[in-house]
Amino acid sequence: MELRELVQALPQSAARLSSLLEAPHSGMSPSLLKSLCLMLLERLEQAEDTSAAARRAAGTLLIDVVRCSPDEALTFVARIVRLAARTFGENVGAVSESIARVFAAVCRHSAATLQTADINTLIVAPLLHALEQPDKSQQSGSADALRQSMSVFTPSQQSEFAPALCAAVRKHLGNPHAAGKAFLLDCWSILLRNKGVSAGDDDLRIKSI
Image (cartoon, rainbow, N blue to C red):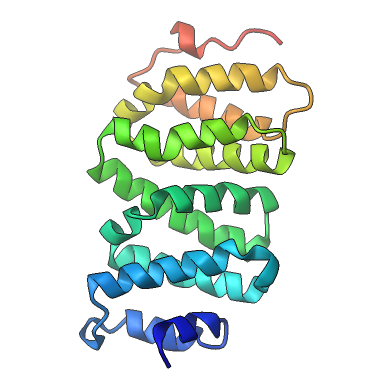
């Protein structure tokens, strides 16, 4: 079977795909891994037409792809960020857990290889924008993704993101109908624990709502 056919046959083909990823000599070149990453993302994005079992299998395989070829996975970081926010908002058990591992791996690799400005453009800013949307599931998922990303980024990177993040926390807490407040408070706590950011900084003051 061709690679696309194997991806379409998930979850039944999961063992076969996993064995291909575990065997470097099998011919899974970087370009082929990149193609597989894209195909798995497409399956995960087709939530309405894909069973939870297939999405769970695709998410587990995507973890292996990111581990084997993190540079190729970064090509799709914008899609992975959008997928993470949506999946966290849906909170579909094991599917969310596998996407959380993929998202964490991409954030770690981004933190190690990208400039802070690029991380902001690719990860933080899109999540802050999604937080402004009216859909409560999207708000909650974006807030959760922000929390998870901040736990991965370095203190110096967190410091760069602090002004925009804390402004979002203040605005979100002031909206009685907003979702994901607990996740944003966790973000704020992470920033306060950052030794490079003072709890007295204006950007970190959350006033009484």
